[in-house]
Image: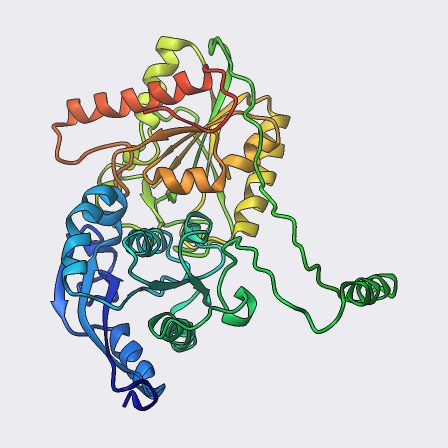
Length: 356
Length: 76
């Protein structure tokens, strides 16, 4: 092992969530961070694939943390865990892959970003719609993975390939060649073809209606300007919308617990509270115990009614609900557009959206 | 969804547990919630206190809708 590299042994620390760390599913998402010796879960595959590449890599420790715990305590987890990770003297820190798990992706990005700022190389992997990508792509090397766990081997293979380059201090190629997300770094290189020929080729392809690829993609920031405030809410119609999956018991519209393809519209008329006997959560991305005991914890109908009386706004007589758990951006946009058309038609002037 | 509803012309107050996700997806008026499995509650509190907490979060969301802003703003 490590034939071509002077038997150099590399030390790797791996970060995983409670699920891949073998602690449990969503009901254990509040699990506090802990470390164990050696590889765990996907770490075994990681170590194997490193060794398949003739690299003498040892996963010296695996740090495990619950996704919700990390999301709710990011600063303290980083503060308390960066030192222990560094004390393992890692040559590389690997996090994930997180696929399309949002909290996990952000945790992986945050861990890697902290390591990079200490000069410790890192690599992670996520699906392109994971919110961790936008947040950390500039500071962290994130390989692009599938959105589901069945893409594990391919994801780990890409992470190993990139990780090895970082371990050996080899040059990182362009993002497309490495299979990772662009970091927004510009680097000069000598192209085999002169610019005029490339430009003419591109123009001809464009004229022919063929596919062409720009050499200088313009970054696209999709932001919506804030709408003006509503100084006085008296008489204003306000709608409740939630991505927390509150639906009538039995989930009559069969909204999926993850990767939702639809939303529901349910009556608020005459409702004084979101009663546990009538409503439940259809969400599969958090532990629904507390919400099923009192759905107002996600859809606050009880205090919405109280404030209606005190402030004098008009509750829209319907609420909209979907499950925001690995839901594609396309679907979420589609739901919101359809919902907005109805809201505008019915004179709704403001929305309170709750998310878990 | 917050962004798309706002794009259509309706101001949205987004009460959410993970502010960074809300910022990334482009919500404009963001109100941090309590925790992922109970954003508008806390099962450890006595019911009256918990309801007060929920009421305060909703009041914050309503205040956010009444506040003129020029960019993404977290109302904590």
